[in-house]
Image: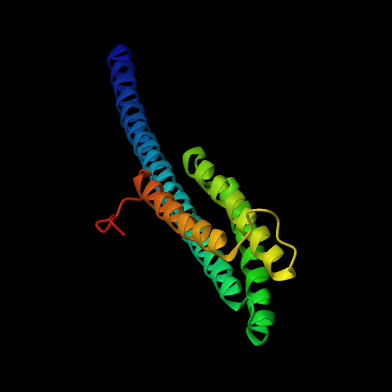
Length: 180
């Protein structure tokens, strides 16, 4: 009887321990699954946030270059019209400063292919800026002329379009209207 009772008690204890362990293991498996799902969701949110930051950077860069080009054009048109010249100078300085700030942000976010184009574009914007300012100051260098500045500005608009095409080619950046 003692052996039967001991075997029965042992079987009961084993059954209770097995039941408790089964519940514990099931709970641990469910916790790990929830943790993996949460980590996956956080990675998805991080990627979306990074994509939003990159898009925002691209929009700001495009806008800054457009404003810089428009301000260069305005300054070029204002040459010889003293009443428009002061406000055109102020707009050009503001556009140049804004472009510098946005380009600094792009240096952090943009991939090398886009940054290379933006860097070349920024350098050439600076070259045209120098030409327009020298024309404004009345101290042009050889080759500086309103016609040369206008041609350079037109070429920079084409380069801006090329930069936008490159941006749209980036993963996650394509749009249905990629021809713009």
